[in-house]
Length: 122
Image 1 (spheres, helix red, strand yellow):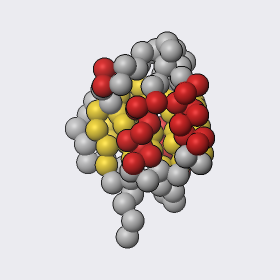
Image 2 (cartoon, rainbow, N blue to C red):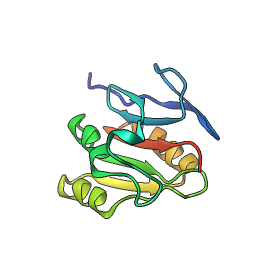
Image 3 (cartoon, helix red, strand yellow):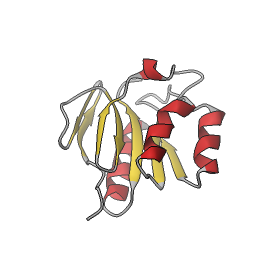
């Protein structure tokens, strides 16, 4: 059996719950697991947005589709270079408001090697 991406069981402002992980605020999720997403690791900020380094872990985990959240108030951007890294890897990408991103991610997790980056505040 291939590794399954963990489902998000709860999302609200500033809090997410994910199968098999302690509750947290922001998450990196991929087939076989996930962890709290540390924006400082690759220099992510609301603007210019999600950095290329943040998605490399998802590619390394074998994702063929990636869901990127924009935050609850759509303040989180995605750097063009990040989208280029995913396109170059042939990965399908969805960029959505956080609650929609979680809904789509959970739907895809049932049948695909999906990864996601989720921001549960602005």
